[in-house]
Image (cartoon, rainbow, N blue to C red; front, side, top):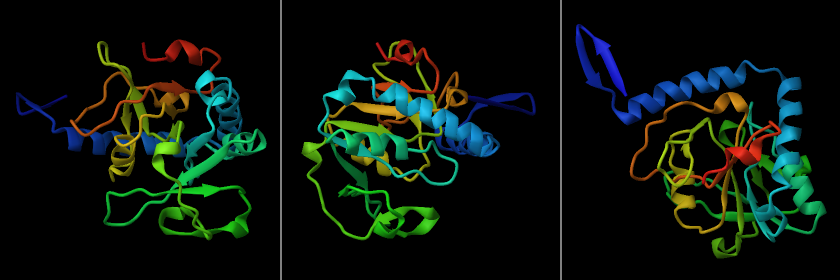
Length: 210
């Protein structure tokens, strides 16, 4: 990416470009209505559970959504109802480690509320990362760059997911509202590509990385 000023074109550092894009994409997401997000989240769940990789999975790793993120409750409820184990990430401050904790309910009384509104299971049941065979990944933006074997992802900047995704061979499935696709996205060596993106549209299969 290039910045233009004083008749000079200079490259924009990836971290600064990401920071700017994060602000833009969060504002766009926050501008959607609750009604829109609910309808789109339900459609994303319906599309995701059709994936063969999901249907064959036994241990599904899925985040507990906060704020204006895609509502992952329909995904978690579907997985539990169909006999799958569900694990969620536990974010540890000042640590690159992201332990996985099994959950079997979405009842409010099973969780404490931490920083940023994160839901933290009151009962910790650690799960070996090697058992996970399907990962649902949050994002602020995504881009498919020709020649790359997957989808670029813009996260929140803390690096938790990149550290976690680097440690698992499970399919990495990003979920996105359709406005979260962008034409270009800065990429750094530590950024992990996603295998597939699922959105609320009916043509989600055509968006697969090939």
